[in-house]
Image (cartoon, rainbow, N blue to C red; front, side, top):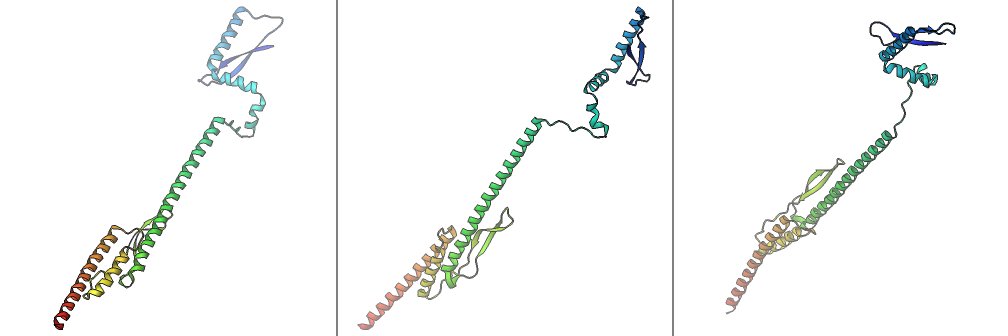
Length: 225
């Protein structure tokens, strides 16, 4: 049998070499020798510290622990179920945020499409009712949607509101202008203002016609006398 005592190499290197002290059945160590051997072992353990513990753990693991390193490969780390759970939760949160973004885009696009359709229908009603007094095609104000397309969010139709010199023609024109202004299902404040102005002009023309007819009637009556 033998007992190994480890003595440190000079220069501060924590590696060690084994010094074997043989035990003989015919010769016993003296008390001084046994004390020296124990002191050397204690000093070696103190110097090596964690290296000795790691060496013992490797020895217990046996050759199988180094099998992955023998061919230069590093063993794969064990999977931490807590990490897997965190990644799963993070993926779920990201999917939820993506779904929320898509829902918001869908809501905005739906609103823009509805507005576009309503604006175009509004201006089309003006054009259809205005007839020959409409002076040009409808013009639109646009807003770019999240899909990159332009959507109409406002519109305008120009109509001739000048008052003809002939009262009867003025009445016919102002009635058409008023009808064109009120043609949409939801006339705007500007539409209502145009309609009111046309109605006022129509009333003046009707009054002029009435006065003219009254004057004519009076003249005929005077002539008959």
